[in-house]
Amino acid sequence: MRSDLEIAQSVRPRPIAEIGELIGLRRDELELYGEHVAKIKLDVLKRMQRRRSGKYIDVTAITPTPLGEGKTVTTIGLSLGLNRIGKRAICTLRQPSLGPVFGIKGGAAGGGYSQVIPMEEFNLHLTGDFHAVSAANNLLAAFIDNHVQKGNKLGIDPFTIWWKRVVDVNDRSLRSIVTGLGNRRADGIPRETGFDITAASEVMAILSLATDIHDLRARLGRIVVGMNMDGKPVTADELRCAGAMTVLLRDAIKPNLMQTLEGTACIVHAGPFANIAHGNSSILADRIALKLADYVVTESGFGADMGFEKFCDIKCRVSGLKPDAVVMVVTVRALKAHSGLFRVVAGRPLDRGLLEENIPAWWRSTSSRPTRMRRSTWCGRSRSRPGPRRPRSARSTRKTAKAPWRSPRRW
Image (cartoon, rainbow, N blue to C red; front, side, top):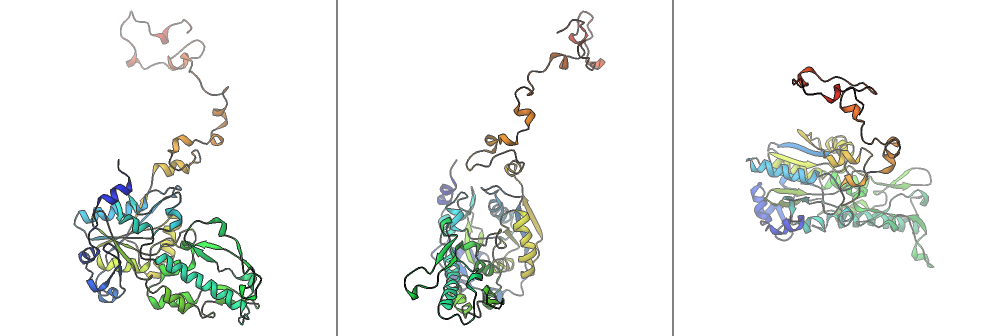
């Protein structure tokens, strides 16, 4: 069987302008990033504001294992199936973080023949949205340190600053650091801080919830970075940083248009984690897709108790959208893993990882472990241990035959 990468590379993608034309996008509403990736301008919402929205379908799953349970595969596969039966369908997905891509989970472009292509573009830098989020987040962190070092007019308490820098890789050594070390005054004031992963940043969550560029600017301005000496919150607007952050995200707010192996349109935008933020693709991506398609299939990250709950309680409340149907992904592997009897090991079937400590004590004991059954227990009645008689219909009708369960002799 061919690998996911071999399958993805065996298909030649269609020009992305052609994919946009198939779903009703004009050429001037696309910003091409090469031949196979494009950004969708937000002006398309004004042109289609009177068009009727399509059906809204969300794909979620039971609590997954570390390797995932196939929500993305199901999302892409469902959109492929709807298009195959003559319906116009678009899937909307999150852009994967480089941390999981280079970690245990690998790429998030789907699998098998349900993939988004080009696979390499999808899993790596794409159009630079994650780097723009990192730059905006770290710009605010630099504003904070510079403000404290240059006189601290807002009276920020350094011990209450919880705003951290971000980087889009898994780097545990940066979780807790000390900044401002040096022998010169220009090196800053030493204080404890740290790094988060970009997908877990508040800027990423804001980007996926913003409804337009003005809403993005307002939400960035309300970011609370710490407290002042009087115990009052200090925001990004007070630091005069929100406008600069918005400028850095002026292109990142535009959703990305890609395609599946069969040429179905796929809108990829934002990538917040569900355990930190709300774990869903952007509101703008869903709104554009609902105006362009009859069916929009989106995905909630993590399990239903996290991603789907936040999809309903956060994303739908902000956007005003309501799902028309929900698809629940349930796998035998996840059911086994959450039973507590199997060890989850990457690349190995769960059957080989039975946990010794979770096996009942009566089974671990060799003295009490059931061995070969006594013959008297399965051959019917006996003098030592009477058993149930077989029904008359099952007895032999020949008079010469002596049934073993009728024999008086001990076995």
